[in-house]
Image (tube, rainbow, N blue to C red; front, side, top):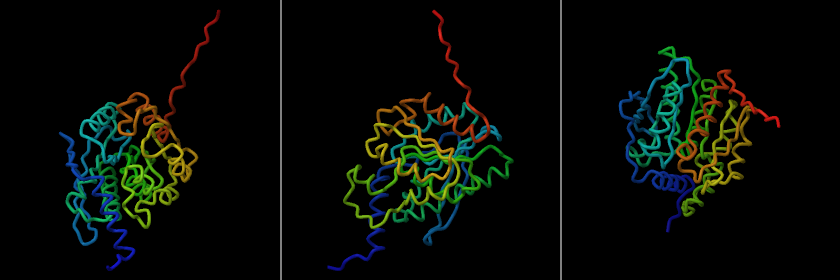
Length: 276
């Protein structure tokens, strides 16, 4: 029996990881949104990763959003509709489409394609004189791609939002019941990449996250280089729908964090003591 070399074994494990996460998923297309074509090349394969976008005010926040492996059209639609009411511009990147088009694409190649998509969004903003801050946001597995792309474009982004993030991929897979995937090295290296991102980060995490405990995600939080980084525990019953469970709380935390990058401070709540 011939043993697999290090790189072949790692690639097989990565293929198993991506297949496990995205098997059965279909393209999620946002109705009535425009598409920004983003073409790149990786591993000899021409990749096209469309980014769907909705444009709000040019001077309001712009959000580059990378979904989780469990997001649905309904869960995304409810979040995006709330952000549209705040006049946010939203750029939705369905990166799992890369896997459906090229199932054996490496995680490194996916990271490169997503970073190229973020570069295209940045160029689109500049061409349209859209001066609002650019925020990168990712949920669960999407947070790993968000960390990578934000780190690569640190100077261009205002901040990063990590929802249901994770410090170690092997620990996450073990909790998901896929500890049979033998990763010789972490394909995402979230902690190392977080050290290179110097802008503020907002971590949103459920205290009842089934896969990544608050203690585990703190290892990722501690790698942030910015003193303005925030760690917000969301009182959600699970990791799968933080916004749906606590929409007002969630939206306020997200809005306040991004607005602070624009110099807008949240209004202080006044507490009146009743006199007897």
